[in-house]
Amino acid sequence: MRMPEKDKKNIHFCTFYQIIDIFNCLAKDVFMSRSPEPKSITNRVVQDLRRSIIVGDFKPGEKLKIDTLKERLQVGASPIREALSLLTSDHLVERMDQRGFRVAPATKAHFEELLKTRCWLEGLALRESIATGSTEWEEAVVIALHRLSRKDRQLSVDPDAEDSWEALHKEFHMALIAGCESSILQRFCSQLYDQNIRYRYLVAKKANYQSRDVSLEHADIVEAALNRDADLAVSRLTDHYRKTGTFFSSLYD
Image (cartoon, rainbow, N blue to C red; front, side, top):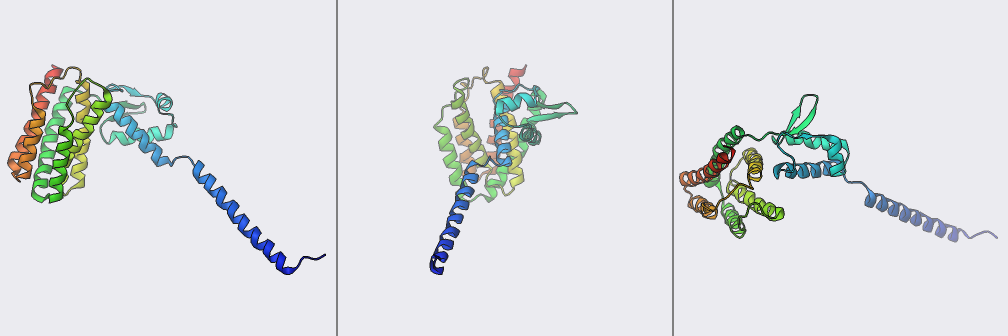
């Protein structure tokens, strides 16, 4: 018995949509099981290594062996090599000729050079922010100061608490210069800040800030900035950095 042409068309119609459904399901399965994009893996490795270097998990001058990092980070060699190359531009990692990578050294001379450069660049960026910053910039600075003031400064305590304070501290200092109309200058200042944090962690066990009211120093900088007094704000910012710099340098003696 021959099947009517109408029924044949219905079968073809159903089969077509069934095939589409199968392809959709297969595509979904492939998408859901797809490995992370290579760039996202590299970015994660960069962030993990940056934090580990800054907080001192890797000591200054320590060789960064690819095989060791593969086991530690559970990734392949390629994203590790790419991440280490990227971190050389932040001056947290150094490339050794034909011998791989190592953590950048930390010396008193380097810290003093870093401090001088931070005072120059952040002073310039703050001056630009005061000259061109909007009402939104002012509000962001006030909010950043408020968030930071709610965190007690405690060194040599739980690492998670210290990380939380450091994140808010960087957010505050970057907010001060966010009104500067130079993303390049802001990026340099961010890199210098990260290099400076390394020294804070390296001397954390010796540090004692009880003789200083750091929260008041922050508030005084903000007061001058909001009053659009660039000379006073920059003076207070650089004095704030130099007090910390003098203290850190004394710990290297």
